Image (cartoon, rainbow, N blue to C red; front, side):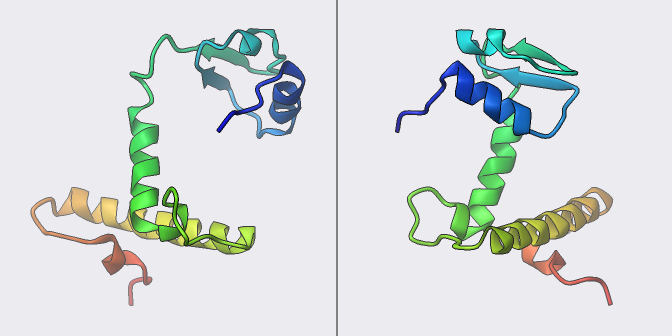
Length: 117
C-alpha cells in the first residue's frame, strides 16, 4: 500500500490534527518543511522510542477483532468503533490499577468491563 505523503496533503492533515506540544516522526524530508504551529517537530533517528505505542496498538488488535489486520470483522460505524475503543480503554485501565495493587492475582481484561457493584 502506498501512502500519499505529498507536502500539501501532509500540511492539510497537520492543520486538522489536534494541537500537541510536540510532534514526532520518521526522518522523511517533507516533514521538515511543514508548519507546526504553535508546537514543534522532532525527527527520531530510529524507532527505539515507539515501543510503548506499538505495544498499545498490539493490545487493541489483540482484544478488539475489528482492529485486527486483514480481518473480515470491521466496523461500518465510526461511532460504534469509538464506543468499542472507549469500553476497552475503561476496562484496560481498571485492570491495570488492579494488577498494580495485586500483582500475583491473575486477571483478564474481560473481568473489568462492568462497573463495580
